[in-house]
Length: 405
Image 1: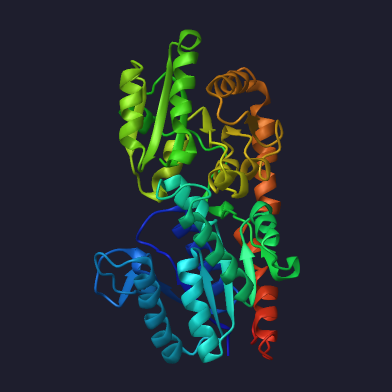
Image 2: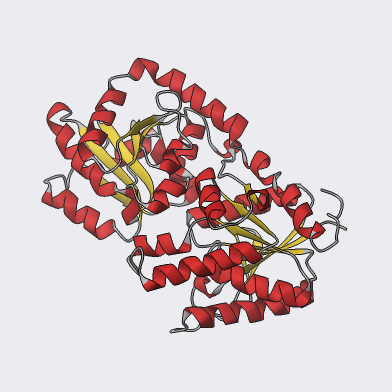
């Protein structure tokens, strides 16, 4: 009988986010390993009463959401639904993914029913709350959130995380390093065409013929530092009269960025496409000469590695990225991409200028970046690491990893 895993998730497809895309990549690879996966989302999926939903070819069990339910109420709802599913599906283990609002219900139910729990900490809940503006670093809520996260990390049978920065943070909480495994973000290289020619029809439709195009594709969160890109473009305009900025996506900062572009006199230079289907994003990437990832230097970005630079490398796109810890863990400066001083619009403008001046070197860098993801950062390589994690979690309960693996 194959290994049976019940994943507990904050949210999933059909919602679009880096979180949801990582989840689908994990599920696809686990199925290829011959494992059987089931999937439960928390009330954070959004309003709805359906207990089961099909999305992107996958079946997701849902936790009904009620308006005005607090965090404790959300955890109780998740625990009740999880208890029901564990009894029904009889999984070998529960794999809870961030935030801790999923981990604690999984641990409660796992302890009660004798099922081992793996907790995957994808980001620090308290640091994400700081960026979203719902708390401040060092506040009472921050300290309580951090305390709950630490409790979950200690109580889980095994812990996984997405990068070395977070592994260090978890270890500083007193969790044994032997219990922590990094399952790094990766890409499906077969899903990205390397160095593809631009779609001329799309270029024409967007009015980008003959332009030097800078750009970003993703969610417009405050920590992405996208205002710096607009500032840098304004500084570069006198030397690049054909300059355009292509902003692909949307999010909380959308309105502020549009207002900034208008106030800077760049309303006709900065093009906002809105969100586009994930399968279509590469067509927009291909129109951008140099991508920018100007993440701001905060705890969240210093500790967490993003997916976007890896996607850029897989496609052979040139990019610059701020030198926060999450980027430094991924990017070899001058070899697979370029780093600049975080939080400095002038440094970003200079980095963009330097890359544009090095066009003869682009092909070499593109090929090195593609080779890096092909060798080091495929989902097949990353997800294979779960076998040992699950073996250890089951062994703590005196069980063995079922075949096949």
